[in-house]
Image (cartoon, rainbow, N blue to C red; front, side, top):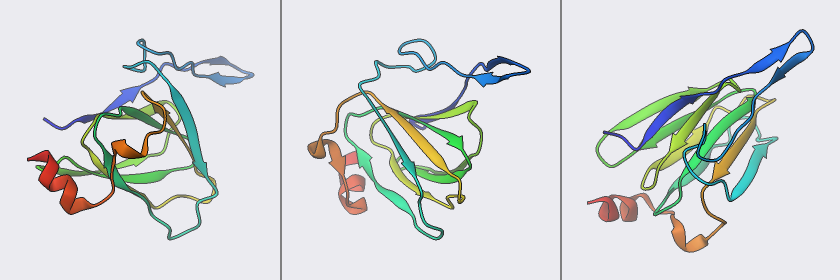
Length: 132
């Protein structure tokens, strides 16, 4: 079984607009320690190309869309993120590549840990070796 899955968020709202609350250990399956977002990614640019040893994340396209290519060393999957009411849970040891960013894409990422360069695996061959 892969170490990723989609999460559906409950949207609240009325004629004035919509709101989604993201809460640790409720609709986000970990304590949120870091939040960052990627925006203004140029057309044709891909990002990611890494895995994390211990970090868990939830990615949400709050605007626009982008494509995730995921790999756990056994299976690969392509997932389109194109709605602010859906999140992509990424557990540890998942190779990720993101591409096909729309011009208005804002990709927000919630993380279970603070930034730690030592948690990154930035070479795919090293990732395959470590996953075995």
